[in-house]
Every structure is written in C-alpha cells, then in structure tokens.
Length: 213
View 1 (cartoon, rainbow, N blue to C red):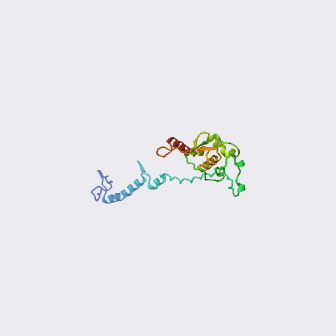
View 2 (cartoon, helix red, strand yellow):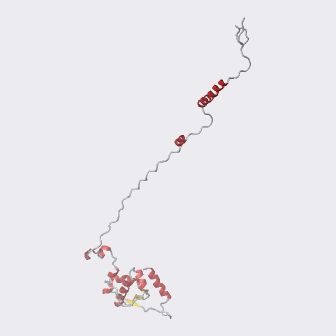
View 3 (tube, helix red, strand yellow):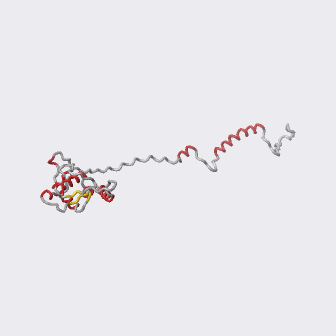
C-alpha cells in the first residue's frame, strides 16, 4: 500500500479539518469589498422609521392659502333729489302781487308810501299814546293806524311800538309822526335824570323792545 505526499496511506479519504477556520487574505478582501455594497443595499431596502418631517416642497403645499383680495363694494344707488320749484321773480310792475293775492299783510314801507323821514324827532325812548280828544274820522280810519291806536292806549316807547307791530324803526317813526300830525297821538317829552339820561325803568323798557325786534 502506497503513501501520499502528505505521508497518509494512498486510497484513504483525506481527514476533515478540525477546529476554527479563518478566511485567507483574498477572502477578507472579497468580504471587505462586498460589505459596503450590501450595507448600502440594506440601507436602501430598509424603510424609514420614527418621526418623518416633510420636505420644503411639501411644506409649501401645506402653507395656508392666500385669501383672494376683497371685491370692491358696489356704490349705493343715488336717489333723485327733488328740488322745489320756485316761482320766477317779478320783472314788471304788473307781475308784483297785490294785497288781495298775498293776504292782508303788506310791505312795511308801503304803509309810509315810501317815506323814510319823520316830521317829528322821535328817539327810541320817546313815549307816545293816543290822545283822548282824537277824532277818528276820514284819514284817521286808515287801516295802518288801527294797530297803533289799539297799542297806544297807554304810553309806550317808539321801540316798543316797532317791536310789537313787527316793523322797522324807520317805518314806525314815520307812522307815529303822521298820526301826531293828524292830532291822533300825543308825543311825550323824554324825561331826564340829574345826569341828563333817561330813567333806568324807561331804558329797560326800550331795551326789551329792541330785543324783540
């Protein structure tokens, strides 16, 4: 029976190696080259776990939508304004309304026939009253004298006459002066104090009359 190069008998199967076996240097190189590839494949195959944060593009999708600009409000409808139609101003004398057309009230200066100067000097505080011996006939029965006749039964000042009858002072002076010329009114002299002034009570009456003008 022959022997092999290792000193073992020929025809006998080689004995299995016992104990730990370590890879050779070539095997280690193969494993070192393949390990990163396998680890990379494992990392790619592994599914992410734990908390996941969205990317910037996903965050842009979830941003709050911008509200559209408000539509302009429709203006409120303008309602037509109806202005009163005024009568045209009179151009000629015949267009001026008469007393019958406008009523019993007449213009103040119509009472004095346009006159503005009185024949008597009448101050605001001058007192007048109806004469007891006045004769109310003829021209004395004119309508413009009757309100003065009713008002001047007691002494009143010129200012009070103008305020009560709602007429300008100039018109009241002319009217009272005309009545005095006809003997219908008595014109009192103005009382004076030691200082040459009208009494305080009279001045208060005149002031009250002026405030009513």
